[in-house]
Length: 189
Image 1 (spheres, rainbow, N blue to C red):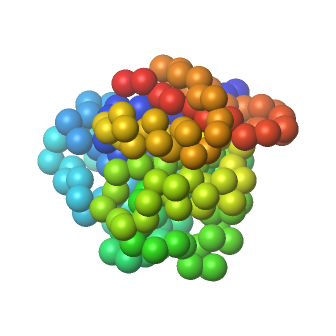
Image 2 (image 1 turned 45 degrees about the horizontal axis):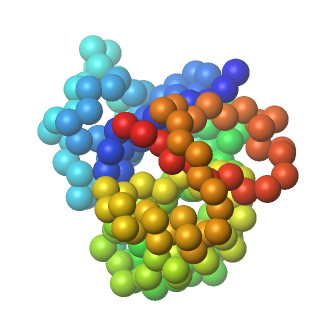
C-alpha cells in the first residue's frame, strides 16, 4: 500500500499511511487525522477535531513520540520546530529556512530522510542557495518544496538543477524509494 502526501498550502500537509494519518501545521483545514503536529506559529483553533475523544494526538513540541505506528521526533533548533517522521517505514523530514546550517547532530538525523518537505519561506537568514545545498547534501529520494512566493520557488528549482513535476497527491511506496536519483515534486493544493 502507498503512503499519500497531500498539500493544503502554507506548511500544511496530510500524510496518510496504512494505519494512521498525520497533519502538519493545520490552519483552516477540515481534514481529520490521528496525529497533529504542534507548531507555535500555527494555532489549532481552526482544526476540525474528530468525533473520538482520544483523537487526534496533538504532538506538543520537541521530543520523541510514537502514535499508531507513526514515529515522530521533534527537534527545537533556533526557536523552530523541525520534525523527522517515519510512517510505513518511509522516513520524512520537515525542514525550513533557518538562521544557520543544521547542527551536525541534526544533519545526521535528517540525512536518513527518504522525503524532505521543505518550507522555502521560513524566517531564517539562510539563503535559498544555502538551503538547496543543504537539501542536496542530505540526499533524499524526493524533495517537496513549499512556498507561496513563486520567485523563491523558481530560485530553489534553479539552484537544485532538477526538473520538477507536479502532482495533486504524492503516492509513495517503499519500492519507489529504491529507485536511483533524486526527484523534485511540486504538490498542488
